[in-house]
Length: 428
Image 1 (cartoon, rainbow, N blue to C red):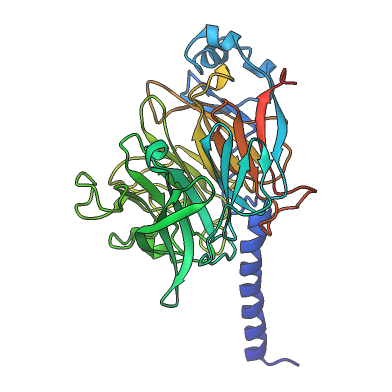
Image 2 (cartoon, rainbow, N blue to C red; image 1 turned 180 degrees about the horizontal axis):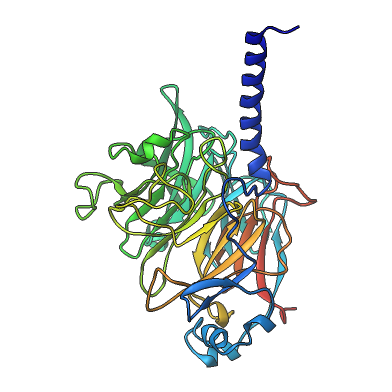
């Protein structure tokens, strides 16, 4: 017979194994453990209660209040009548975990692949050779070559910014490098920001340039969740710097690049086209560091604390900012963008973000009167392509998005990974 000590050791090891297994299982399946599921395929604002309520069919939206809500989504009934149906078409295939896509012209698209390659699609054709290879990139699990963004003066200076993971003094670090696009590749690398803690999980690295011409950077907690509350650590933050990497004088914490804190792993950023306000998507805990689920949509305000790891899910505490939306079971919200085009008038100024675990795209509409109020959210129909990571609006007004089915957590289909796009159904 086994001794009591031996049994205790076996049970302890088994429990540890189950916890770690659940951590990874949770990234494949939307587990609703410890928290009540709150996400629906489609939700609209109930004007009587001021809350989002589930709506599962067009018939459910036939009430007077729902119709009024729909009419306000684009700002006018005339725009509503111009609703353009979409279809999904493949734009490019055979990519490897495409993380970020940026258009440098109407004919040219650059794609970061997480293992360190930058790919180019010119006139709809994917070049078989990399546009550039980032040889120092350390690609492991969630880390690698990730975010990219064009300089506002790109047509004049050719600058592009990249967020990537590499090894420095035996540590896994994220940094921001600026390159010059020569038209045939990249040159003149300059590191403008360094020493952001990274790890194989919770690596952050989404970057955007705001209407203020400042560079905004998401950082994960690098699996050390206490760092998110440490003011002097860049981990678990959204950072804001000048385009040369220096700290703006009007940052909320003098001399610090920290713009907001208390983040676990923000993956999507974009600015509202009218208000200029910043919204972010964020991954919630995965059992090993907290109850499963709790993915968030947040309105990012300077100097504010978003709570991780002090609170998550529906938990609240004084002095901490509540999320606008919490998803449990998890959907793993990823890249995000506001649509400002004219091809799909019904989507004007709407917020879109990809779903990794949730496999699809969510459309979200914010009130023009109250930027914290969501008046509609829905998962777009007809998008059955697996995990969706980045999403952006093309110069043609179409909506482009990438799959992430070759990242070890999805089921890769022939031709994966892909860039797809939403185009009018009437397009030949």
